[in-house]
Structures are given as structure tokens and as C-alpha cells.
Length: 184
Image 1 (tube, one colour):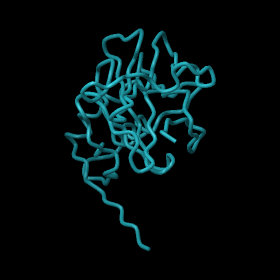
Image 2 (tube, rainbow, N blue to C red; image 1 turned 60 degrees about the vertical axis):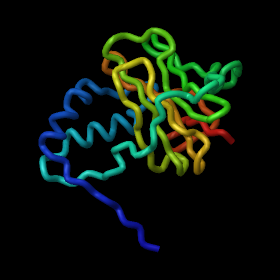
Image 3 (cartoon, rainbow, N blue to C red; image 1 turned 45 degrees about the vertical axis):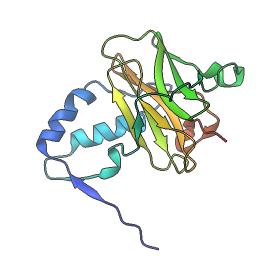
């Protein structure tokens, strides 16, 4: 079986647009750079006209809300084994919100959000071998993404004070001992 990889040229304008997003990104001692940070760094370093994988762009459908009448909670809530679903870092509390009816998930900085913080979700359908960073924005929360779909795993990530941190809890372990949430 042959696998094709699709590539897209990254223009000088696109590289310049990514520069403010990647300024000051550093890996924390407790956690190596996230896939989203690695993609942004790689894209920033690419000269105009070079080839970049198209996988860097989020192609997963984003919903504006959890769904009508949804009961919203968060992954790991009430479970000491998963630190109650909260990742604490630099005065922030990061969670992966989830709904039980429509099974959509969203990242949120629950406490400590400051202007300039960014939050997103990393999503994989193959155990963390490839992924997409979705919903990155300067807000305390992302849009909603369907969770229980084709073995999809999701984790919440944030950039605060120039440092990237992803959730330190989850029920699945992927490459690099990164933790993800699944519905299984």
C-alpha cells in the first residue's frame, strides 16, 4: 500500500503571520514542547517557497457550542487518579470540558486566565502518531470538537507567559508519554 503526503508551499506572508504566535515559545522542564508549538516553530523557520506538511492546519469541524440542553462537565472530574481533571500551571487551571449528550469537547482555562493567554486542543485519531492543533485563540476557551469519532483522542493545551503546557492527565498514553483523553 502506498501512502501519499500532501504538501503546501508556505508563503513569506504566512511565515510572517506565524511569527507573533511563536515568539517566546519555550519548552518547560516538566513537559517538552507540544505538537502545536513544534508545528509553529517549524513553520516559522521555513523559508518562503519551502514545503510544509498540510497536517498543520486543523481540518476537524468546530462547533460553536456543546449542543442544546447539554450537561457540561470535564474529563477526570471527581477522580483523584486524574488530578480531578485539572492541570495547574503558572497560576492557571486547564481542563478539557466535555458534554455527555453530543460528546463534544473543548479546552478551557478554568481559573487564572490573563489577557494574552492562548488555549487549544490537540486531536489525534491514531494514538498520537499524528495530530492537529485546533481552536487556538486568545481566549479562555476553544470551540467544541466531536470527541467520540474514529478513535479520536483529545487533550487541552495552553500558552501562558510565553510557555506552552498541555494537560498532565488523561486515560491514554501516546508517544513521548503524552497523555490524552478518549471515550473508551
